[in-house]
Amino acid sequence: MTVKRANETQHLKTPYHLFLGCGDQELSIKTSRGIAQFNPDICIGEIAGGNSPLTVGLEKLSIQEAAAKGAKTFVIGLANAGGYVEPEWEPYIVEAIEAGMDVASGLHRKLEEFPAIREAAEKHGVTLHNVRHGYTDLKTGTGEKRSGKRILAVGTDCSVGKMYSTIAITNEMKAQGFDVSFKATGQTGVLVEGSGICIDAVIADFIAGGIEELSPAADENHWDVIEGQGSLYNPAFAGVSLGLLHGAQADVLVMCHEANREHIKGLPHMPMPDMADCIELNLKHARLTNPKAKLGGIALNCRTVGEEEGRKQMAALEEEFGVPCFDPMITGVKSFVDALK
Image 1: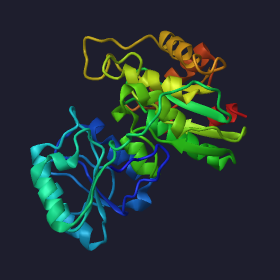
Image 2: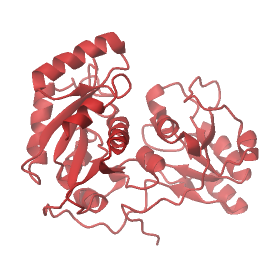
Image 3: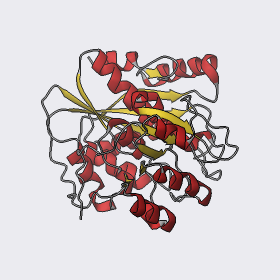
């Protein structure tokens, strides 16, 4: 059995052809959007099925056109509830296999569970990459003090910008001369960075240990920026968020929030938490393994309110909590990184 380590480089052939599915939900394609935003050089183009209006701004290419241009891996660049290959996706995946491309998926269900995909891969000798799977030799967490410095993104909910913020912070820290590494904990981050661990597919007992392995002891001046997952206030994903908090042993937390979100994603009966309560609860759990953990900034996703209203809300949050508040797409993250010095 192949065993993947948390820091192991994923052996995915590039360039990618990104598949956006056949729907119309913008949040569903955050995997494709993240890859196209942060590593466009490894992308040939994009394709959306049916009448889907979705795009991440890459060249629109058919599978045959992408193969002719040299695409090596067909990336299923979206997620759905349940994490399975929807029937309308299968013809596109099979066509890509027939065109000689490997297929990479961050879904919970393995690609070989779908007979048409498995049979086509066997016939054409391509590799199916299940990015979320294969971490079978992790240890439980210890909470032992590790050298180095760590930043962890946490959130009031899922899909509020934790991955985007952490990659933007990493890039700004590199530009300012920090010794820094991005540590991916989800399928999008792994596909962007080329290494990491999909922590939401790890058995619960090994989540904290998996993060300890992902971000091991380092030089005292080295920073790891750890991608966050879920939220302590989301009843579906609070478990993985807690394991991350314990395993990360973070020195600095970045609280991520979407402006004006009214309820937990997909759960209209669950109101959004109070920001102060959310910050306090995350710090309390972070301090189990790092008593000195502190709030370093607030990343406010202003996609639904626009720049003018977003800047007003950012100013109010800065005044209330006394830390930099920023939207990586509007203000950038320089104010946060400057405060680390």
